[in-house]
Image (cartoon, rainbow, N blue to C red; front, side, top):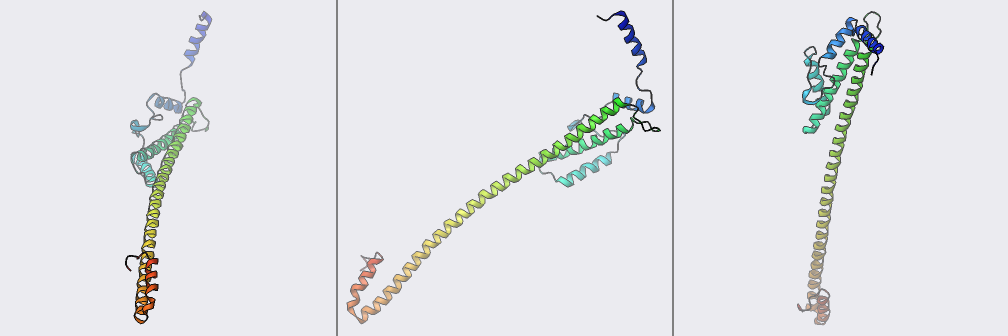
Amino acid sequence: MSTSAQIAANQANAQRSTGPVTEAGKAASARNNQTHGLTMIGPRFIVHPLEIQERFDQLRANLHAEHQPVGETEILLVERLAQHEWQRRRAMELQVQCFDNVSGHIVEPKFFTLYLRYQTTHERAFSKCLNDLLKLRSEKRKAEIGFASQNRQEELHEIKKRRQEMAVKNAEANLDFQLMMNVTRYCGEIHKDPAQDARFREELRRYDFDNAA
């Protein structure tokens, strides 16, 4: 339980704690009480009325042109890149308003620290989205290379098979041609010398034409 002295001290401190006293601090505090959009992502993201919509649109268009997303997942990642970069810039602009315009000193360290944390958060989120996009594309390329490699192996196997078939056909054609040449030669020899008939029959047996004799 708090003592009477502690309660009185707390009440006195509460009376002295009136919030920001400078104009910059009051402006920062007023914006902090509203939805500043520093934690918004995805479909809840908006460009504030005081911001320039055309600049965000240009940022998003530049990122799409640079990364050329293909498919819904890549498009979503590029959209988040634009959102996180815009929110990082927003946090930096809010930090500026925590400085005194004359002295340049930070007059609202609490809000400055808060906006600095949001800046860091969106920088890390941007890097993560970019890494996710690059990883996704790398996996796609590996899959495409693997598929192309498999197709290439199948093509090479088919080419090898056809070459073997052609080699067999060429060997058979050469054998048939040699047989035809031998038959022609032996027929001429038999016509001149009937004693060559035995040699002719032996040649036929060499080519498995026993019955042909």
